[in-house]
Image 1 (cartoon, rainbow, N blue to C red):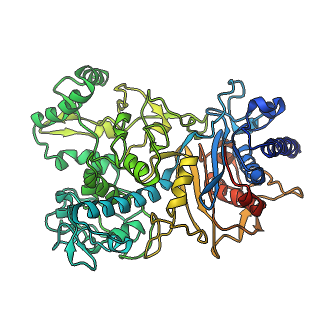
Image 2 (cartoon, rainbow, N blue to C red; image 1 turned 45 degrees about the vertical axis):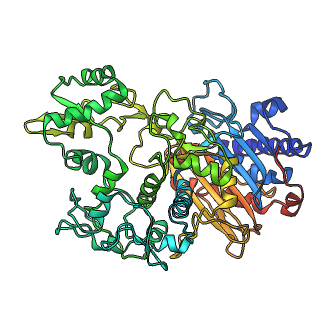
Image 3 (cartoon, rainbow, N blue to C red; image 1 turned 30 degrees about the vertical axis):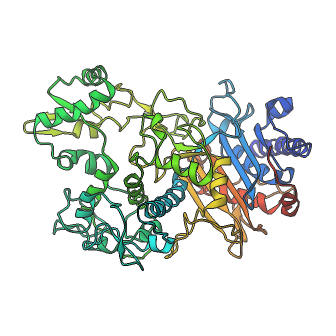
Length: 599
């Protein structure tokens, strides 16, 4: 009974809040903030930004989701036929979003409230990084062909190039009987994947037969860029294990045989980070100067060399989503841009300038970006000034658990080889990016994803601009994802992203494939969604053409769903897009289109 009463009470507060939001927005598209109304600041999720007042139902649905799912921060952007009509920040930069958050959420109710999320706050996107990567690789290949050979290539020609054809390096351009003007895959990688030389590391695989011949799966010789863009190359969902398969085999990948070889590797780190930093880290681990060594982290190329020792699990052309599919598109971009970088290096934000990401958004979309503004690689390092909200994940005790970092691998000299097992097993522990033997927040531990796969963060307004020009979905045999949109507004595509510290959706509405019904918790007679995720109902609605929506929250788990009996966190957070679609179905889009604009 108490739970139901609390739910009704929060619904009344929410209804009052959103009425106030609507009134403020109707009064001139002004900003909504704490200063607008004391009751709003004390009782409801704060909202910053501006937008068309007709969009209030989407804001209502999102705030309902945030309150029920204990979400601390969110961003929301909406545009109509490429024109922004609303960009907002919701909640707070750290901890709970409101003073009267539900104690069942598990937040520290005594902690002081943090700053409200600004509308231009960047949010980690997870796999929504993939459509950006696929748009960028199309751009880089077309631009290089134009600059180097005066060739105007189509998307189909780019997609049909066989990347690992053993007879052609660089690959043939379909329809022209010409080779691409420059190498787009590093020569060593091409030699291994095309079957000219044996792979360096064998990966035991329970999902399909091991490659006993020592050569890469022959299917690679027919893999095209289009197969990778559409997740149809045969790749498994995830890459080989970062520690056991990749880092532990760095001696093989780098031809490290003697102590002097490992000293040379460590010297690279000393040159970059100072002898004091490396020496201090060894002291903390009780490693004598010549008893063990720190080595640079594996590169994406080295990860792929290890991948060559694992079979392709599925037949060519069969769709199976893979987080490894963007790896070669990322490598291609690194080959084609002068800097050799997709984005900024980890721990080196100044290297964003000149990266493929910086050049693409500047030249193609007219958007200047930095390592913390616009769109960028989220920096998973300590002591980095970040504009992103604190990333949350309920670990059974709180939202800010810690763990051992992966970014400073070391090995211990053992007889005639250097053994990485102590680093893999975290005994006595791992040195973090700041060269300290201490754990870091969970959101800073990921290293086995490239920025092209899932580590980009973006401001909602900037990502709306991207969505206005490029398709975010479309994994068909002839993949549309990453292609230019060319003012087409009657096609439905979508992409989501889920990663520690984020759950996000990019939605392009339009055409006959628009969703017509969706599951939600029960809705009351006022149209408000209730907090009952274990009792989903089907609801129908009509959605518009040409509306783009970007939404992201700073977590994908909370105490309530971890402890729930009738549903789990994956199911609960998987409904975020349905909350947004329900809100969109209640908007009078004819009126929005007539008055579109954001201050």
